[in-house]
Image 1 (spheres, rainbow, N blue to C red):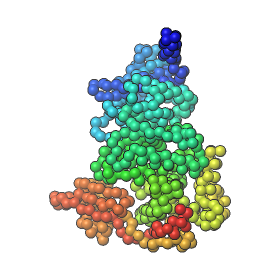
Image 2: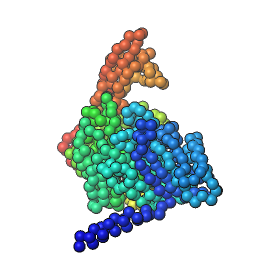
Image 3: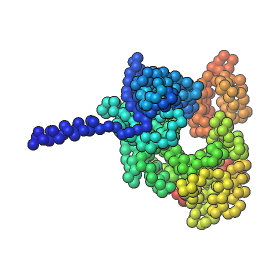
Image 4: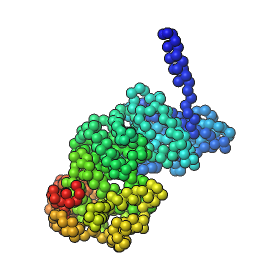
Amino acid sequence: MFKRVLLTALLATFLFSCQQPPESDISYAIAPAVVDSVPQLKIIMTLKANPNGTTILSFPNEAWGQEGLYNSLGSIKLLNVEGAVEKDADSSRIVLMYPKDTEELELEYFLKQDYEDDISTDKIYRPVINEQYFHVFSHNMFMVPENADDHLDILLDWTSFPVGYTIHNSFGSQEKEQFLKDQDMELFGSAIFVGGDFRVFSGDIQGNQISLATRGEWIPFKDEDVFKVLEETLTHQRNFWNDHSQQYFTVTMQPFPQENGSSFQGTGLTNSFATSVSNNDQTDIGQMVYLFNHELMHNWIGHTIKNENEEEQYWFSEGFTEYYTFKNIAKNKINGLDGTFYIDELNRTIRDLYASSVGEDPNSEINYENFWTNYEYSKLPYWRGTIFAFYLDQKIQQASEGKQGLDDAMHQIYADATTNGQKLTHAYFVKVMNSYWGQDFDVVFKKHIQEGQKVDLPALFEELGVEYSPESDVYQLGFEFTEDRKGIASVIEGSKAWEAGVREGDEVFSRSIWQGNIEHKVELGLRRNGEETTVSFYPVTKAAVPQLKPTPENIEKLGF
């Protein structure tokens, strides 16, 4: 009996080991490697060859604000045929040349980290590969055939990594072989791949898997608390949109060192969201609550509901996302936050908008160049869109005696996007809102969005019967940097900067500024006539900016 069981087991093992991997259009076998004492990833790519003797692969040398990505490539060679490989960084191409009528190619290439310093905010979009872990985005990891079909079958083989080495990415967790059938190549090019000493926390929402992959020793919070925030955020957002269609979703979170201040950023990707967060005691879990809620809300606003013209509709994709971030957190008391949080965030946004030097510029000024080069223009659609969404929400609820609100309009916009691919245009938005507002909504829209005039908040607060203060402290830096940011170009007399001793012509050798934040001091190291000094001050001034009072009565009247 024992012999029969043993024979059966051996036969099963033999048959399993002889199973052929599924047929694929492209396969990548990824393995750890060390070349000249440098940890690297070795990738063997197998693909069909172009019979004319030349196959061109795409691999961007510039992407996501990063330049010189070809510096992360090590040696590249064909394994199964004699041939040549040429790297053309200018065109982001890898050119393979080999004998004509070759049917299949095996290409070996190495990927490495191309810098030695610690990871930082300006390095996170480059490959991170060391002895402990790797963190790489697909566009700077996997070469793909130029002009390939929109959908391909892809095989990812991670079996060369040791037992216990975490493999985690946008397509699954702890899977050593991944077969991506009929994979959308655009989505494949927007994915995150991590491995090594990452810890993975998993759960499910209505049968759909969610996970958090993180690493390092976190100072400001515990892994479990972050995962709880993620779980609450996704649950309530999916419930709001009545959308539980995503079977797998992951968030990756890597720490980076930063001595002063806090910094965090995230990138929405295929089935995933990649975050990098400063690991110090000035970072807190509240920042993760905001980050997750804002960025994951983009799964619907910005991703499913797409802008027809990006910057032109940023007031919607960023501003309305910001408003629903505040609302989702407060309505569902994520991490214990409630209506007081909602009012505090609205007040902060009001202060930012009213204090902005571009606060009443027309929407046409929020163009590509201004948005990506000017801080105030980059934040203007967030501020303007948030206040406009709040205004619409309250007015619709008031007119319908609470029977309708902006939520109803958002659900209609979402339904149109999913059923017939409707994109967000100004004309479409006005048409939708006319059924909730009335036939004169185009006048309101033109005034507050296209022309950029501020909403009359004191009048709105009076209508709603809520208590408010007519003035408040607002952010005022009080000086302008020189173009190279190494000196002081001008100072506003009477400002806090002026009172602290900042003067035109001072050289700046150090600075700590929390842009837009009135609760943190500005700290400057200045040099004047060869003498060095340090100054600090709160960047604040009084202004006629209305602020809601966070009273229980106000919280109740605003629906929390």
